[in-house]
Amino acid sequence: MNEYKVESSAPFQQTFVHQIAGALSFERAGQMADIRTACRIVLLITREMARVAGDRVTLKERRRSVSHFRQIAMYVCHVTLQLSLSEIGAAFGRDRTTVAYSCRVIEDRRDDRAFDEFVASVERLAYSVVVAAGVRENA
Image 1 (cartoon, rainbow, N blue to C red):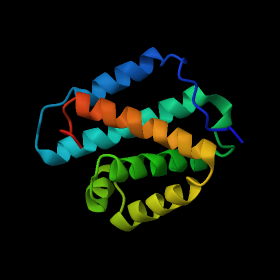
Image 2: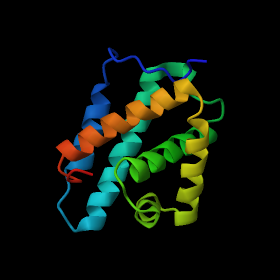
Image 3: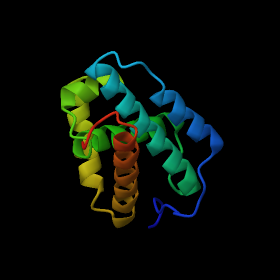
Image 4: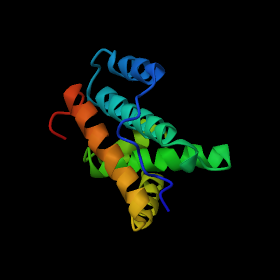
């Protein structure tokens, strides 16, 4: 079941680059702005990597796929960027308990090797982009 396998040679779309640039072009208005920006970047990376993976990742119901990608992004923000559940909740407009639930769901799904590889790819790319952008120093 390789529905989450990501092709490393697939190019990113130009619109994705513009979205990342837009996410990074902000005035530093404090730590919460940095956290929101980092979370937005992770969500954009998650969506783009799913798009690169193709129809194998897209779920039948659009609403479910949107929430699924948000859950992955919340998980990556917590595990990889070491943000607190409250910080992530505030950045995504959700409660910290919703973030905790998302982390549990994604952690349980990581038993599937293909899904685990997909999430690991998102983690590596998100960490690299967020740290390189200077949004989070050595997260």
